[in-house]
Length: 623
Image (cartoon, rainbow, N blue to C red; front, side, top):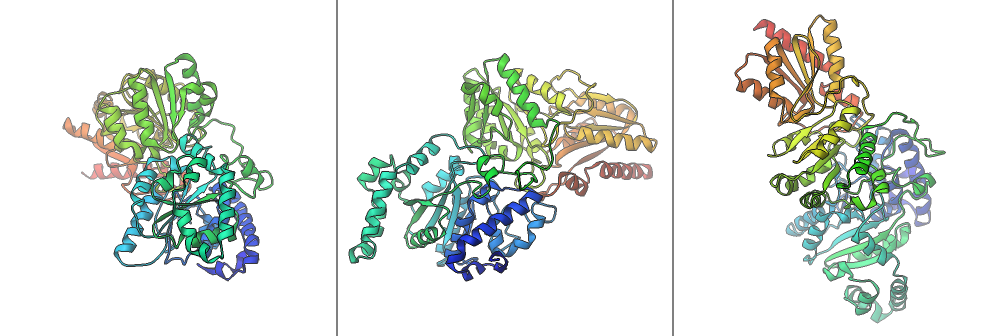
């Protein structure tokens, strides 16, 4: 009933405070209903309903600015800024993004998608405001999980010097995607449980509030580095940095949140509001299984169970199984993840070999250099990170792993198109950014069996190596083709003449279909499983050039710096007359949408590739 009155930004301010809680429940039911159909980030959004409402009640959007860290928790923000009717298109092609997008609304001030960036971005907005002589309020909303990322501390260090208002809201639900780990989590837990301090503080404030002396000194008390506070809450990290600390505050008390946000707006300097929320609040399945409902597939509202029951293994499952086997066989094998033991498939390894499993938090840079140290210490580290997240550790891969030629294995999950999360999560750059690094070897399996073989090969390899594999069900075809993995060697699957298809990784399955379609049209077609993007099998390329007039490369990566460019360079270096068609993703960011639909739109599905090949053959005929 109240939700229907929210048509545009600031409409929430027309709702009487006695109805705020009712609106919150309506928003929760709306989110559960919509996300059960489209899929999306449910748990995080259910946890910040009241916090988001309080921000919209306290601020004047779009004049004031909110920067959401990661941004997957911005669904309520989208509802309150006039986008409620677009939720049926959530994360669908040409539909509404699951993350903040400046092109969607002037209330989305900064595009986000990766962790630990909001304080830096918001601080930039603060300085721009001050330079321009403006008076708007700037707020960064960051989760406790994102505080495990080093970039957040670089920004806090910089923000501590501010002499103008900047509000940082720490949304503390003791979770990132999985349960938080490490010293930051322990520190925040100490604050959560310091009830003696909180009760005393509340009593002092209540006693002083409304008195002449109280109104003039409360801010001073809050900003003082109290010796008592030092005793009860070890370190008081934020205030020791010069950042005013307010909290902890109940993140599901709208009136209390509005009050503390309005207080924070009066502070002349950086202020951090520590807000306690419950991930998945209001929906029992999400409360019981917050990790499962972080990024949910369509599900039955009554039970919370997925609508599609998966029986076949996905590539992550295969990786999980082989890692446990390798861990059993070799005590030097260790596994590292950046806050994603479930998502990367390392949960089973953690349960079996807890002393050889390391979750470093949302800190990809640290994960890579930590792995380099393990390798230098004689261990065999396997770093499992999603393709788009590994980009954050590029410098560490170059300087700390590859310059020293250390045997670190990079298990790159979600390589290629990942679909609904869009531009920030598509894993379409890893071939380009890894193959340009000296000493790095890069390979990609054609199916589940080859992934297993490649991991075994990689763990025994004495140099840096990366294995990229896609999201989704593991391809089980071509099982009969299983030549031993050998460095830089491709695998001939079918030998004919005229057209040679060199397919890398996930594109081998597509190449099978392309081959069948072209053979129906009367063409002779060979299929080569490229296996290695670096080093490429130049011998196989030259062999194919001897009896194939057209060489076709296929990869699920952008064109620039990809596998196709390397094959074309090989052909040109040997001054061969063969035509080469490179099939890849255009050098552009790819929006959210169903993966198969995206492949079709990008022209890298079977029909699109067949069409490209026929056009190339027609062009050759005319030359």
